[in-house]
Image 1 (tube, rainbow, N blue to C red):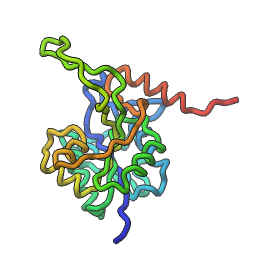
Image 2: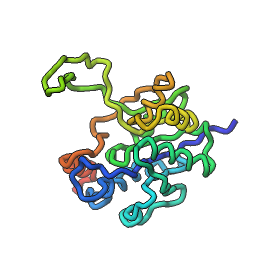
Image 3: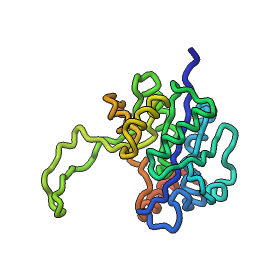
Length: 237
């Protein structure tokens, strides 16, 4: 049997209504480049590791090729099959990968377009931890803060045990066939790929990520992401 290949699927069909920007947040400039451009660069840095790097956008997206003039390159795909929900975009993207020759047994790493601070090293750590796993897994962060449950009136109902709580991140890495089937059965209510896999009774592996691998969600997140990117720039003597 041939070794399974690795594919990247980046759903980018949303608008990010909480970000406080005029257009889709993934196309906002960050350090002179579209936010999603930084996301792509993290996977491009791994070169031939991936058979495909695919970006899933809405069918009527008129901005993507304006803000990403060098996309797609060789081995990259622009998939205009985005849906109304993340689950729909991922499901449609997986179907497009299969139509272009990806095998059900291949691995796919699904990554948030707005999680632009992921590093190649973190991606490699996920692959190393999961490529021999029967299920797959995801980058995640052990919960660092005290966790409260709230009443409907915005008061504390209880303090919850946090030692077994993790914050899910991306990429999330699963077999294409298993993930497509899981999303079909779970429906569009799932908010990440791991929860669809969990609904089948499987237990994804948790791979420690980084607090810097956060998703740009709110207006103040842009400044924080810009600061992290600036800290990574080489300094001149």
